[in-house]
Amino acid sequence: MEQMTDRETALRKLAVGDIFHGECSNAASLICLVTSVTETTIHARRVTTQEDLVFDRQVGIVLCDDGTHGDGSIDSVAPLPPEMHDVFLGMDLRYGRGDDPKLTEAEKRALYFIADFYPANPV
Image (cartoon, rainbow, N blue to C red; front, top):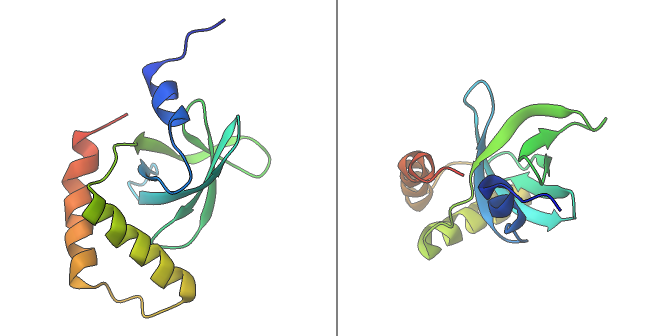
């Protein structure tokens, strides 16, 4: 049996409700909430845009509808401090309802926090 890499092991630990970070080649940030997992995929919703994404669970790269790898990959699965996690859950809920997209002060602080947190905790 093949031994899993540290990256694959970290990706396999993601569960529904976890928040992780990814990045596209144009440096667009992917703050994602895990909505489901299968043996081979991680299904997630991008918190800020409500876009549904599917990631290859072995390598952490976005999967296109045709099964090929797309533009974007998971770069950190570090658990957020509870208060930051809660802010992003609230943001996801608010944006999902279509409420006012203007950022609250807590959301601004959370976005500033992850700008340093995720790069300091890569997968």
